[in-house]
Length: 143
Image (cartoon, rainbow, N blue to C red; front, side, top):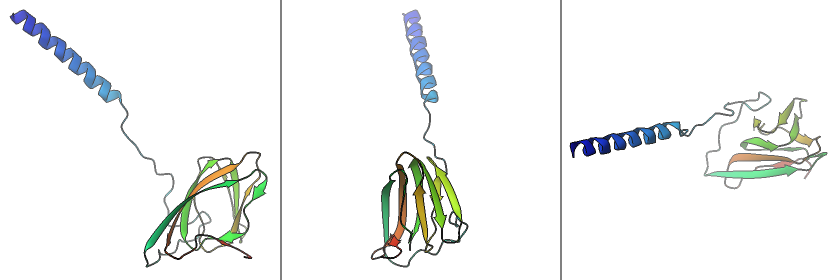
């Protein structure tokens, strides 16, 4: 009887340690900071947030191959990550940034710029805008 109890205890302990070992091999959640700054991609300082009720917008923008977004500016702080393709971003001062899939960006605020997809596949970028009620997130120059 004692021998059977010891065998049962050893079996349970062996199972417990095997289970504990399996749990240890499961990867824990993790995070990586892709970008963090008080400056936009061209080195300009970001403005203060508006002093009104916040409004967050998240857009997925697709730019077809061999095309560009028109000259525009953003009156609100925004940042994004390029999901697919390659993108050239240029501002009114002649600064440029070449992006590839996976690259993050902190966009310029109140500065005219445009984006060009010179590649042969669509560009997809997700952009997060931190504005406030009643504010536009993008203004097309000339409209």
